[in-house]
Length: 309
Image (cartoon, rainbow, N blue to C red; front, side, top):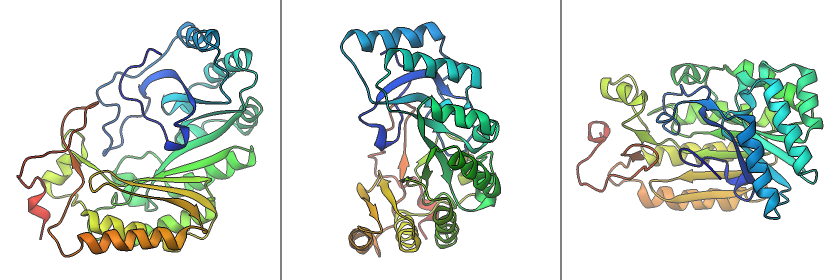
């Protein structure tokens, strides 16, 4: 597979055949994101996409699940996306599910007939970067959607039979707002009922626009203990059935399970981790270095020292 940049997909797609249909992200404006900033967005030519399908077919591949990469493949024009799905159906009629990242805006731009047509062509899971339950946070981070728009988009994709999976970020609201964000996010998720929720807890880069706000004090990051407490409250408030997967890359803790069945076990793991870190020097989840190599800073200097107190 010819691939530019770093592979980025939901953990649920780790065993899927990843078919690149674009390079980078068509939106690429979220203030916290550094995944695609080093890439110039472009759609891959149909000939290249078909060659990859031919290659996999020639070596005996028969994927049941295919993930279209990279960022926001659902934002492709309907005619282009339809042509890709037709090729998949021709080479792999046994494929049961074609999944991809989407945005609220990309869903709202599709008609109800188009959404139903995509379902007929085996599109199933759409991964949405919901991130926060607070409209002011979404606006600040330039997420390009509001909570009411997200409700509308998800209602429409559910009506077409499509499955919605949510990406969220504890800590995204900043210092002191974890409880507020958890309450609003739980309300949103309980109502919209995603199949999966993946929490990529807030990570801090020097190379993204958000860092300018950190420098001038218009955004103060939460430390990892506050992020863990926010996650704990969110899990406590979630009432719908879903698979939850929470990542905290800097302190290396992962909270995963099916709700509500595994809730108590997950809460206990968070309680143990909070107890381990609470009362100690504040830890912030930062990464340093240019994409695609994101390396933790191993120096002793306190990168976020100005917010330790």
